[in-house]
Length: 299
Image 1 (spheres, rainbow, N blue to C red):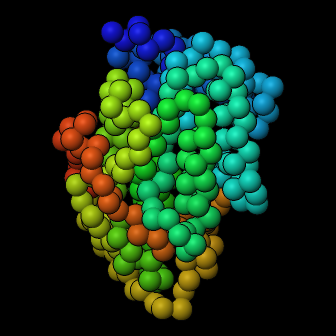
Image 2: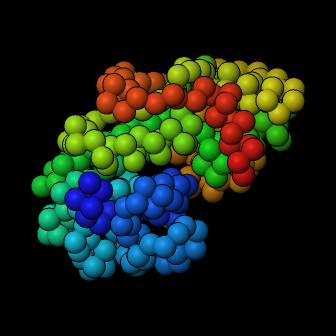
């Protein structure tokens, strides 16, 4: 049955999600091709490696040749804060043109969870814009929308960890009361892999989240409790998300080009409004505390 899917392309294969997904696909017996910009360091297993850059259209035809389904797991924030929205749009447009030319049948995209509207952060706006561009392709796009993904190496997880470990007393803006629906990285991989083999997900958009809806304050307090630390959070009304992003950038190991857009997006509530995916791909979703412990133990 799996042979009927042909070759699977994973873009962003060296990243937080891409490495884990590639390993899962290999274990499931799929033929996997990984597109990397430069080094293939970190790509697991016996896969075909093709060099390609979504901002260089001439490099994409080889990567997409003969591909049935492609996973779109890339973003441009790591390339610098200035212009990442433009780079995201340009990369998506180049990908659509190349994928249409190669007659790719399906694309599965992991983006951000969030409401539509003018008040969205630059990061969430960019994620939604990429989804809109991908949906214009001749292929069927499956769009999975996730909030905070809990797993070692993930930007959001590492920011939470650094704040808890280095700031026992934290003066924060009002974003600490914003609600979020975090999800374990293993559950994200299960959904991504599950969509590949479930044709009912073709052309659909799904919200994915764990079983807990928490404020960011609750997430940090629970993280501290799991690590046996005391944490005191003092929200103040005058500290804006943009201002707080500067001191967060100083404390955490996550590059400012990534951490600052994420922090500025914390003003937006990110919870699932539609749980249809749970009926199509039933999982035992990890609660937040269990996801944190798994991430800490599995490093």
